[in-house]
Image 1: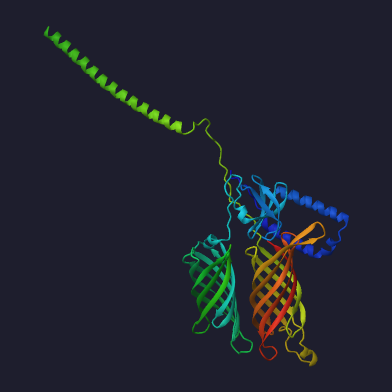
Image 2 (image 1 turned 60 degrees about the vertical axis):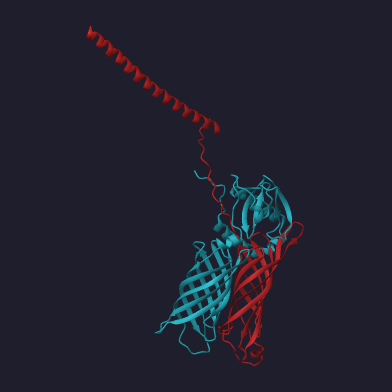
Length: 280
Length: 235
């Protein structure tokens, strides 16, 4: 028998209901503003029902092992501390937003606890509550990356966004979507590739990359050129990552593209870009 | 007589031999016994160092799974507002936005929106002149921005309700498709966000989208200021 002290709330269902609630809120903003006593009673009933539902759902429980745990009114350093949970008391972890955890104590008081403080709580079996923090160690080992930036693609301005998934600390699969805006043509390109980070633990960390994709070319309106076209492209390149702070790093790279055009010869293009990215 | 003497001698020899072997085997037995005793003593010593097992434990150890915490760093939503397109009047705009909160201070945000340009004063005064076709009047934009939260606070509605709020500034790059061409666009702006619940946010934001345009003869920098009211959901 495998016991678990946690079960998560059903994510997708919650999101759908959240979206539905937003729509309902938008429609009923005026109605809510002037609620009658009956409506108020109904609302209180709803609250009680929600509390019962929350009791049924099993959440991760952690125990305070420091002298106390402070709860703030909001997920930010500016928000005031309004409640303190003493040593040995437990809290239920509702969810996490950036470096803050929304928790509920045994009396039902809900508030935001700092990730740094939550790192010092323990699980039911006495083992430490471990989760990832956005720090230098996270720069070496993480799952996902996300970034935006700009640069130059064969003389055209480039706007680009990317997402990457780490297979290992060194090897990442990444997808880039970019738009380029030039004097003679505009277009889009989407690429998928492998990125090899040579020394993931270094602050200045070089990488090599290799991939393929498609490029959509739309000649500028004022120039008479062949019709819009979509070509396959492949690239090889290298770059540098630089850890900034917290969850951020800068990435600059160079790519050598070969575009497999329908003409006799392939087109070769150079791409330079700088992106700001985060990992999580 | 001689034979009886021989028999006696043989008997003595036999008894002697049997006694000798018996003693040897006894000695071996004794030695074995002392070895066993020593081993037992050692075992006893060992047993002394570990606590004696009174009851054989028959409890399955609980395996505690590493908890999966619900992360709510993404924010998606839509809104409506006004966009002032330089030289083309102010018109309604509709936009969608997707935000990823990296830390409590910084976030990445993508905006996608559309508006339709009105008529320039030149077109209005000049009578039957159309600078742009219907399709070219559509102003479609997207932008990728980095934002910074500042001045976090609370908004109080009456005596009992307090909502978290905050200002933010953001800047980024993107593209505008207008007048039959795509333009590289820089955007910057500021906004105010109120959170009635933990997962719902209402935004009011103003952004300027700046790009080079040559629609009216010469290339110039155009400023297109947008005001947007939007609702977003954290997930």
